[in-house]
Length: 120
Image (cartoon, rainbow, N blue to C red; front, side, top):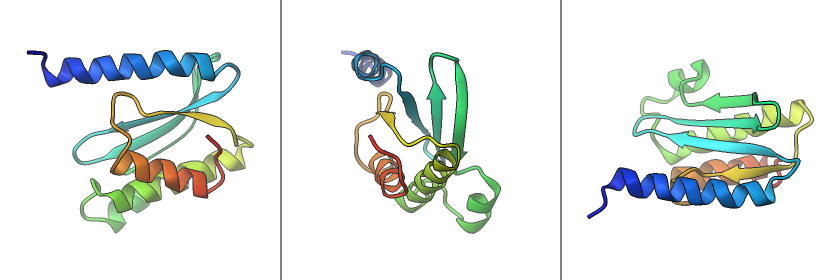
């Protein structure tokens, strides 16, 4: 029986492979989540640079919410990330959910980013 980590790695590899086909010339919005926090980055793979990032560890969010592992906090992180990106002139990205299933906090972050101006 395969361990859950290896299944996660398989999903991550499969997702990134399909993104390479779609993301020619586009930036990538990458999501990472732990049990307590969620992180989002907009990455330029050609230059190997992070252009914008936001996480639940940011000062205002961490002070405002006692538990940072909720969907509500994920929505705030998505909104902040999209606002930072739009200020830098970034509007079109591809969504990299990694090996995570598109529901819960990952979905909430993506929807908040879309509502705040990112297109993917």
